Image (cartoon, rainbow, N blue to C red; front, top):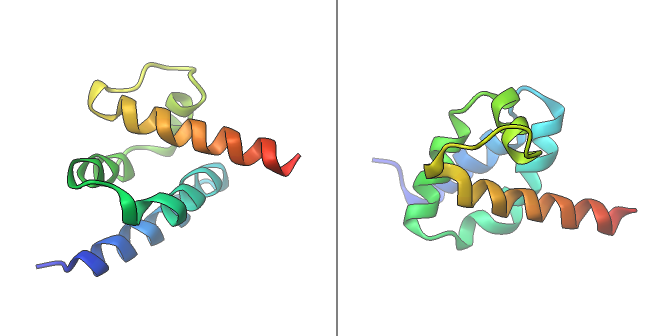
Length: 90
């Protein structure tokens, strides 16, 4: 059985080591900032999101394609976080 600490560590690592640099830079900072504070239902959704293809995730986050209903709210939150973070860096 995976401990809560091991679960968060695994999810954080998987967020930073996606397969495409773009998704590393979107999911990694979000995971660092928010994973520990997510409710159980959100953690389950995030874990499901990590199993998705990077090209699909990027299209959903950029609004180029409709996200699956089960992930839409979380993806919207991630997109808003990424946008705010990018605006701060300008």
